[in-house]
Image (cartoon, rainbow, N blue to C red):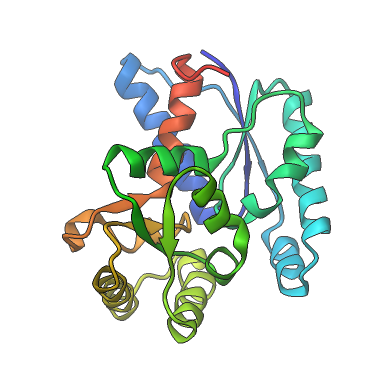
Length: 233
């Protein structure tokens, strides 16, 4: 199997989900006590959050690029960034390493196209919904994404950072997310991107008839395919 390096810590909840799901799927594939050869570097999340709040994406990118270099030096044969929002600085990470970078948007766009969806809703942090990097990245891959209004975006963002990232899950927040999804569906969204790795901890496909694209599950499958050797670069 190939060794995968994971830049984690954004948030710890998300990173734990990645680690558990990757190992679970590898074990299901190979049986016995099989697990994935993973190297995880967990950054200090508050430092990243401070960079986000200050708009200092260059500094955040340099922190994550350094993490990627450390992982490569430790023996990682590819790098995965266990978060959606910080793919905003993916180019800085890619420039810092000589091994493949498993970009989350490659997997998300492929999953959406496999369901023959052309227009989808996007939920995530304020940065993911408002900044151009995510929607433009999807558009370049053939997918059109729409987002909630600014009031809904603010509440979605608040719930992520004040609740989901610290392991708090409430029925009120879940219903707000589902209501927002329904509104986007009324605007023509054929599916919904859970564009923050923590959202899938709150809302699952069983909660709605709208097709969900859980970016964590999609990214995890990319990781498993790389580790097992079926994903080639």
